[in-house]
Amino acid sequence: MAPLEDQFLNVKQAAKHLGMKDERFVRRLIAERRITYSKFGTHVRIAVSVLDEYMRASEVPAIPVRRRMRRAA
Image 1 (cartoon, rainbow, N blue to C red):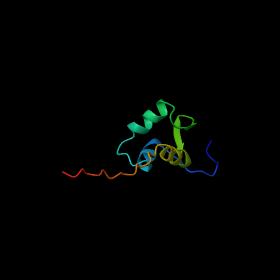
Image 2: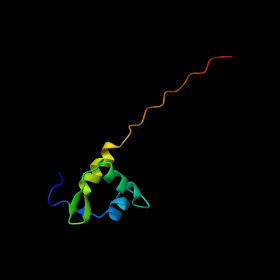
Image 3: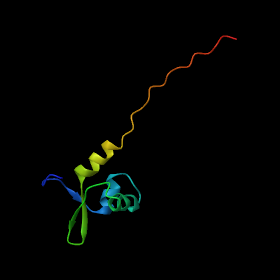
Image 4: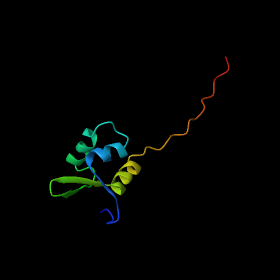
């Protein structure tokens, strides 16, 4: 649940916050219930903290590169 002092964004602003060009991705996240959103009448709003948490949960850690040793010819 988003804190009351959190800033709420519309779908277009949420897409921009996530670095997306259009809002289809955010609408799909909402339709699939992959992010929490609020409805104020007919208006859908997403808290900035929810978007930030989604981005943190989506991070994939880097795998350290192991150097492969070459065999002597």
